[in-house]
Length: 581
Image (tube, rainbow, N blue to C red; front, side, top):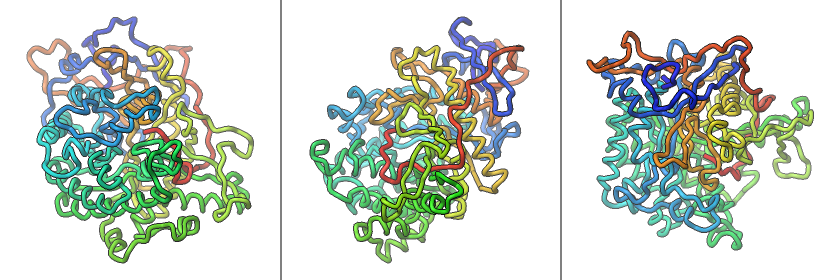
């Protein structure tokens, strides 16, 4: 439930004039109004109680009866982006600690040293999720909180932190989903052998994964090995704009050789399969997958056989970069066409490792897409891309320069993945940075109509893929729970469904309209503890989340959709310049 003044008898510590009214027009034309306030942890605990009983917790995999979508909702964060406290609890140094402290590598030299202080505020943020009725939360472990040097003795202080977080989530009826690696590679191991470009990483990552499964697998059944190898390999080992900052241009990068991005993909695939093999032994009742950043290549001219064929070639080239090895044990045809002998070869034993240790579903991270068309001057795939339609309509750009809004591409992509890999799908990230949120005052940001419209359209297309096309979509995780440190963009891009006031001493959290709309759309309600004797509110029924008031006659609706679509596209091939989540 959203703790909004209109729905709770408990004050959030704000006078009514500080609340913001957020009208939202649904795709069907109906209108709701959400009231947005600062999240007050004390009020949340007072209203909801300290913890519900286990018997009150609904199944996290069950779609609520009131949901307008036939799949579950979750939200997500990543360790370096939210935890802060990089030296607390004997945490070791990661490549992002070093990279973000290197001049000119991030926006205004910003770092994740503090981030949004999730390390200290996790209990409040769990309570925040509880007020929104969230049942599934994906977060990552910091490898160097478990192993400060990447290997060696386990750091009990790091283990204690994650145990407390997991137990807090379980006590709040929120199912934890753990990502083992979300880009914060141990600096000590990087200094030894360069990270993901050396075979030793397979051994070290597997040992780390095995330890995590042993420590947390009794309570955590949903796991993800690696977050977007497509991104950390391209941006870390090709363009050098992300940690560890390797490229062949010595004016920008102090290290890096040609082909390292492909080596990175190669060893990431092998590390993933090796971790899956261990997982099957240690968490036999769990599920596991790798998350992949994939967009859709939409034919520029759907009536042109050349454009259709070119779009399909580019889709296989970009979308199959990692998933082809994961599912088939080898590089895809288009990859071989482009890279030839530069591709590291999978040995028979490595192919067997990949094929014998399959993941449970495709974990899709989807943000953006483009049109693709035939270009005779671009061998060997003879394809080029554009963000302008054949009718001359430019896709709307989000605040992030790499992200153009193309909602119908979501449906096309889900169909392409389902057909190519014959797998169920879980959307583990989807979200958008709304233009102007960095510079605008908070009062103008909370009613985030651009993001609301983005979610409405993308989720509508995902639902159509399920209901009309037969795609087996398990769930949808919005990126992100909180505004946070967005890598090279620092804090200049806000993807959160909850606003973080970076200027306030306590990094106050405020509900955005998008957080309430998501809870409302997916039929979520908060779970209250049994009423205590000192409750001051009526306890006849639990407060519900954004039950959203209907607007008075003549009230304004939401902003128009941020972009129109046509069927799908894909992120820039694998060599994406994305600097987002």
